[in-house]
Amino acid sequence: MITRAETVMGTVVSFLVDDENLPDNLVSTALDEACAELHRLDDRFSPWKSNSELSRWRRGEVTELSSLMDEVFELCSHALTVSRGFFDPWALPGGFDPTGLVKGWAAERALSVLAQLGIGAALINAGGDVCVLPGTTYQVGIRHPQKPRDLCAVVPTTSAVATSGIYERGDHLINPFGGDVAAISATVVGGRLALTDALATALAVGGKSVLYLLEGLDGLEGFFIDEKGGMFKTSGMIFADVAS
Amino acid sequence: MKRIFSLMGATVAGFVGVVTLHSPPGQSAAVSKVTSPTSNTTTSSSPSQPPSGTTTTTVAVPAQNVNGSAVGQLENYSYGQMSVKVTITNNHIVGLSIASLQTLESYSKQLEQYAVPILKSEILAAQSIKVNAVSGATYTSEAYAYSIQNALDALHFK
Image 1 (cartoon, rainbow over the protein chains, first blue to last red):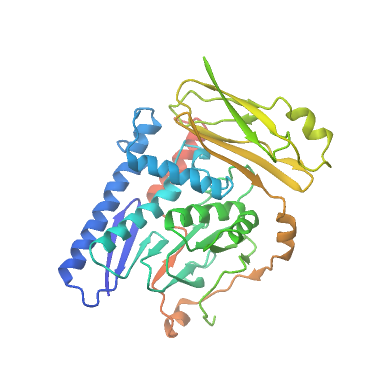
Image 2 (cartoon, rainbow over the protein chains, first blue to last red):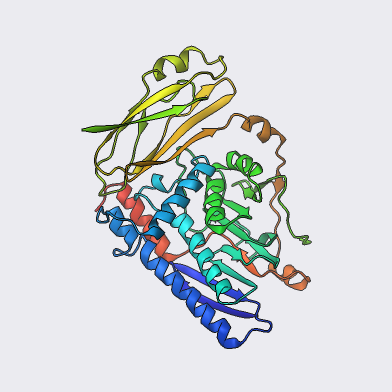
């Protein structure tokens, strides 16, 4: 098992590669390439970098969008539709901000770099948003929103897990419909991380309304915790059997 | 010169109210209002009627680049509440969705509430189950600074 941690996209992205029978240099080259991809995407989509394509677009300086930017717009609009507007990068106070989706999407792209370079089993954790190559089941712990040293659940995954919440960064979630944010922590499991990530944000904002939407989406499950410590889950949500 | 978008919704029975489009900074072509010619009357007059018919909503959009999204106000109809959301990027409507919460009430009632478990890390470590990664909302100083900047921007503080 080889691990690496890279500081990028304003957070720490960690890699875990099952390296059985793989030459060391293949793994380290693949990790270099995956990290390079993350930095390229960060340079293009960071709202904190004034020269990024996103920042230039927000200032009205870009007329012709890159194909990657187009893809992000398309993903954002898909996530907006699927979440019935509870994920809305257009509704943020600073203007269009796809950060809630780009982190997961970037991790997904880094994961496919690993796969293309010959790695068969790997996990990427982009600051709490996790995606894994299919074929291996990984156990992902979900941080307890009120007890940062402990977990509140362990979730087995073969695809993606994302958690969104307001317990650490303060009140950074916006309810596009106005009103309160429903959850202090919300986790979505399954699907592709770009969408999983966006839906975790939507679930934190919309609570039961979005949980209800998840019931109707194939391959996606989730749960959220409200400020009173109540936990609500979709009917198909599966947790690892851990004695507490 | 104005471009006109027509939005049709078969189940959207005359309830689209006044909508405000917000656009990113620097995209000053912010469109402001979307009105339905029928909204004011149909909405309030027959809340007990099942949804029927078609409503055409006319959205006046300037010819300049328009980006933004807007949600029509939540309206009651016979099965619950719904609202319509429109998103425009570079003058294209990229999203049109109906946020329907009609069956939420019954779902909400059958939903079980659990007490959130506390899994002590030392106990987990002692068990055979191995946690490969931890998912949770992240703290980053950069994001925090950005969040503050957002708040300042919202207050028009330069």
